[in-house]
Length: 288
Length: 261
Image (cartoon, rainbow over all chains, first blue to last red; front, side):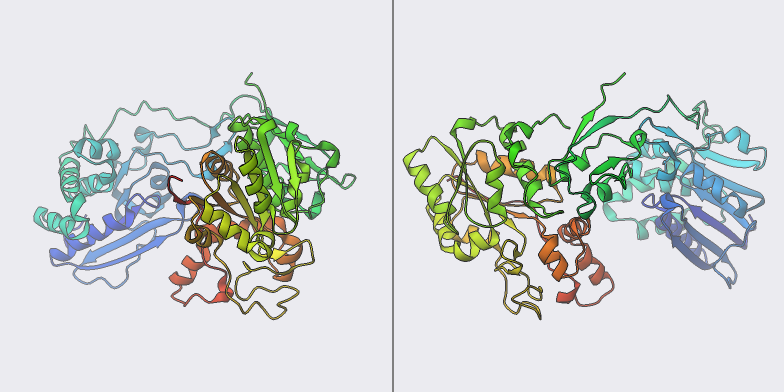
């Protein structure tokens, strides 16, 4: 990263501390006399949007946004967000990533059996395209430092090795931005991140993550007993509209509700609880 | 589901019930029967008393000792029954019209005496059985056959009224939170002294239709938004002053007041 200008992209999942860590880095840059611009998007990453913060610093910064392929460093608080942000990294840039896995709802292939599709956490594979990957389990490091929530600050500690900001500037920036009661834990987390050796930062990633192999053959979690004579059908529709898995519907030939997606039922029982007409009983399947 | 069987407590020959599609009252009856089952009440020593109105029709579907009484007087009959037979568990089902309008006086005195009864007041903000007139719980602005341009009067807060009158257990439940409702009813029945539960239960046929709130599913969703105070929060975030048109004030569920009788 050039001494007099640079750009850092911080990505993660809402609640992890993307915005705070970016604010700390921006403050550290400011304290070292840089012109800084920061811009963030909080876009529900778990629902397909992005949670990112762009940070650019230099003698004079005119635009806050980092163009594709121009980030000097990416700080990723979550693994799949790191992969998603990779196109922003310039050739030779640094990827700082926590091997954190936060499953977005869209990754669930089958909620009933827990099958998910999530990219395997394989830092070694990534080194083929990004030579400078600094990976660590930031949450574990932060937990050892006193508070697992300070995982974002651990990554700032790693980042501090590639930015030209002075250590006192970082410390002042942390003190100015984190809540006083969390200051000690964040200072410890920062120090731990800064002191991570490349070998520490290369955790033995034998964690082979569950893949999209599909899991066991689908079977219904429950059988529904529907009393047609009591059901008030489409004029009520409470069960049909409340079912989180869209399992219920109407049959043009029947007045009563019908199960239309039996294999998606999770036996949550909401339809039974909310049926005002006593017309549904959920019988959970006995585990095979 | 969840292991509580309640259907053997229903007068099956009376079903389907007369309540309109999407009416919340059936959800309340189910919660009541589940709570009674979870408490293992002695069914021969449990009496369900009701007055007049949609909610009061519920006792007709309970296969047990039930008493369908005169308008507004369910608590009066229940008080007498408890005096004569103190060993009985007496549960009163009433509505906002039955319990707060014509029977309002009986409600405050039952609370004042702190008689060992459990009173479920199903609040749908309207007189459903007679065609959708405004109830004393109708929020200002609510459209009904008697308030075609919106209710002008203030509404009762039934729970605050019960606390002020002396009830020793006061809780609020809602049909959109059926499991919490089970638990609240069970706590109310187990409480010794006057237990008052206001239960938000929607009337899609009259209240929902006149106020353009949609049918059963939409009203349940609105109820949840109201319980969570979502609309008020959104309005506040947009830094608009909350207006009555933005919906009634948030409702708080749970046990609101409890003291030893």
